[in-house]
Length: 293
Image (tube, rainbow, N blue to C red):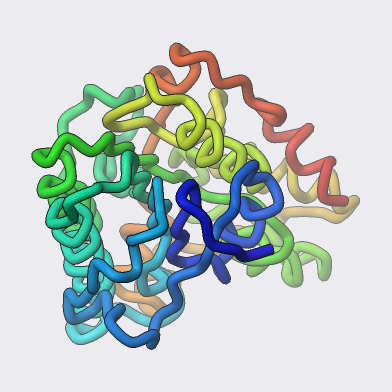
């Protein structure tokens, strides 16, 4: 239920996968800031402080979906602008207020690390290379005005969010249910995943725990190789997974997006989040997938 009071949480991206899972978990009133509302245009960097007058905190999830379209130059610009300009507009609006919200929690992404092969990646790892890494670096830096104004800022670097209701898993279900699933490329690339419920819980946890600040990898503690992921998914669906998807075919079909999202290897672990006291309900892939089927 949306309502307004002085402890209200302002939520962007409330209609997205994580937003929908999060709102039932919030223990205080919240209101959604929706794209197209007067004074909120993230792609053009517009946010008026009036949106924030009743809010003690902001959870910022909004952004152009990464995998909804092939990456043309115009689509890449839209992905970049919706995140970087939108976050900067929010941060500047919060910083400009006489009575400021106390907290800004921003979605981010493990795309920050790029394709890193076998390297185990904690929050202290250096950024990688490529389009997604550049986006995430600028996206996180865009919150600097809020940080400099003394507002607590948290960046949650999301891995692959698993849910049959949307995202990567939802797209995989039909071919796997038809027995047409299989590993991608050589299957050795690492997949850093997180159950939707744990992702939603982590945002609320960081909202309610004032000691959390800075960057946190929002991935399950046990990443898996693509071959293990596809084998486990097929087992849960009681289907074979014998039809690999060749890397050249993916590159032909999806171009640069295939390299960045499907063929890259990112072995991220949530060291900082676990150290803060957060406990995962679904640390292992098998139990996570079992909860859906």
